[in-house]
Image 1: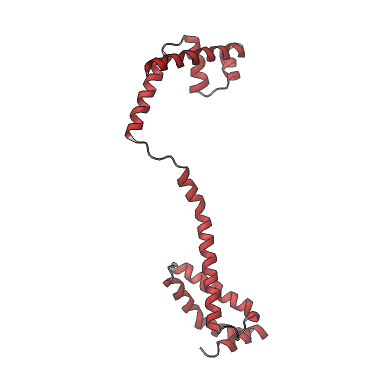
Image 2: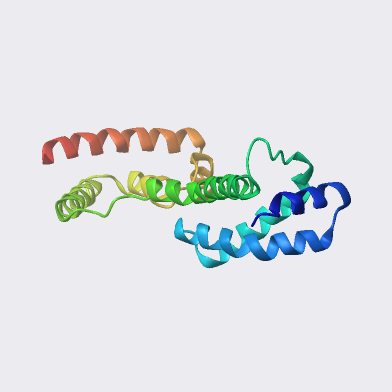
Length: 180
């Protein structure tokens, strides 16, 4: 298109809508095709073509025909917009990557077996506790209550809860060491 330089100049000097329409009709389909050849989906390619032409409208005064032809200048704008879009897409996918990284790997069969064996050992060790110690451990560790909440629920002093927990943990450690 030999008159593209003139069309851009007309846009820059007088905001000539007819010149822009002619430029748009010529370049928008080519930009869309270029984007799609570069791997962009059709809707993204369409959006980038429109963004490119909007930039041409806004930046027409910056066009310097001594530095590049109209098609080269417009292609550079399109290329830069595509790079920006790829960066935005990459940033928007980062949370997905972090979610994947935060996921726990699937349990291995050996891990599940050793986990069930460990659970069985802990259950066996729990039977060695007194009824009072068992209740305090049950409430604090299995129901997740704070020491103060355990004391309130059982109507016993906080110091008694702590003492029973300390004794229970010592007994469990000793029992579990023996079961190894």
